[in-house]
Image (cartoon, rainbow, N blue to C red):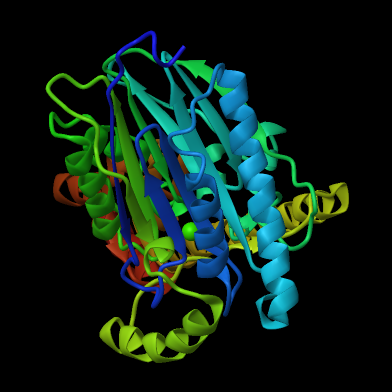
Length: 418
Ligand code: CA
């Protein structure tokens, strides 16, 4: 199939240690028809070794002639399983590497189709006609929670356990489940493979913009890594961009990036790590850090625990929110009560119908609530007052105490009788 169509596949890989980490545990490969990204994990040791083992092992299949896309799919899968064994063997030789593992996302072009193989939370995207689609599914517990409607993708993006992987290549499972697919591709398609150091920190729209530039795959891969750096790059970041039959381009030279490029053997890597860490930390003393990737075998128990933990967190958040609202309402009610109590220490003299009356409170209203009420209707009538006193009382005379209000009435009374 591949030799029936003249195809040009142009790709480029860029990998960066990021702004926080001292060591790059990502590995990448951009070949003639094969492209691979791997993101190693293993805490203090081994992530770089695991991703390098995987990328080098899978890169060996580049240039093989596949009669069908299914054959390519199978070859990728076999190479990944063989990398899995190689990682286990490395751990047997060096027990201090126990627990190392790696994600892998790989694609190979066979004529007008792309075969993919994938495990972990690195991703493959396709940009076609201005639209960017995610091809792979993250093998994380958080993604499982999204799929079952427990949390939203937005909540997943900031979830404290977003880096807990359900499936990886490593020393735990002898036959890890690998996702594979076969998809059509057309001239003008731009494929992209990346580690979560890009997708966990750069929003989808920014990835789309960085990928949509008119430049070559190298330009696009650089633009993506630059975006990650601009978003703080707390994690290692790797981007591989692949153009399908880009006009005017020729096949690109094979390229290895990240830890797979450093020619490291386990012995060397372990010793160089000691020296690398300190200067990098000194260079970037205060930076936000990314959650360290870890692995938990796929289990309903762990998922249940995660759901319970989420529920608890939600209740806690709700509790804090309710307490804040209660405090605010309390403060408003308290202030209103204090204000009301103050108004009730005041008095004023005015008319109630035809008679002079003493009111407690102030002469205003808040909505339907009057802030005063009559405490005494006197026998002094409006008609017996002099025009001056009448008009003053009509406008009301306010006093700071009841005694002074009584005095005002007494004055009005003499005014009336005089
Ligand atoms: Ca990562």
